[in-house]
Length: 136
Ligand SMILES: Cc1cc2nc3c(=O)[nH]c(=O)nc-3n(C[C@H](O)[C@H](O)[C@H](O)COP(=O)(O)O)c2cc1C
Image (cartoon, rainbow, N blue to C red; front, side):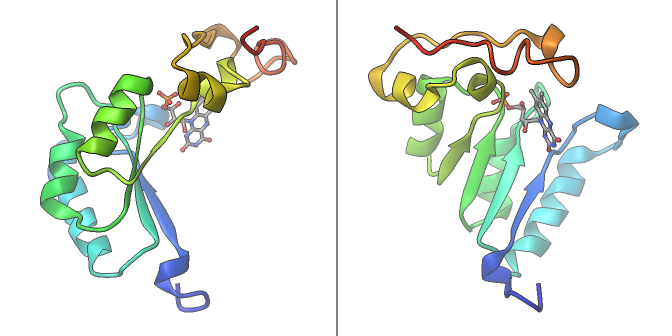
């Protein structure tokens, strides 16, 4: 951060994410503490993956992080609009971008989104990455 300034740094948190055997007995408390510490540092943005059922990430953000927040996980257009209306700066899309090469146009046009095929995530060949089609 010293080299480029905190305003040039974004941080991503994935509270409660169990991938790679990560375990946290009190993920909300850990996340709240980290958010409060990051808030002191005036980052460009905080990106929060909201993936734990029953874990109210938007409320945690409102209570602990006053800066620019990008929220991610499980968004469609309606949920993205609701979160932005509630004060989130931006929404990040993961799987929907894999399955919808024309995702911005589909969101802008209110078109249905194709669902990604999870069986083709992470490895394999072009199948699942380059064979999704844009809406006609
Ligand atoms: C194939 C695939 C690979 C991913 N790789 C990473 C990764 O390397 N690092 C990371 O932080 N998140 C990774 N993610 C998680 C996404 O960034 C995102 O948090 C997740 O897909 C939830 O957002 P979504 O509901 O819009 O898909 C990956 C997701 C997918 C589908």
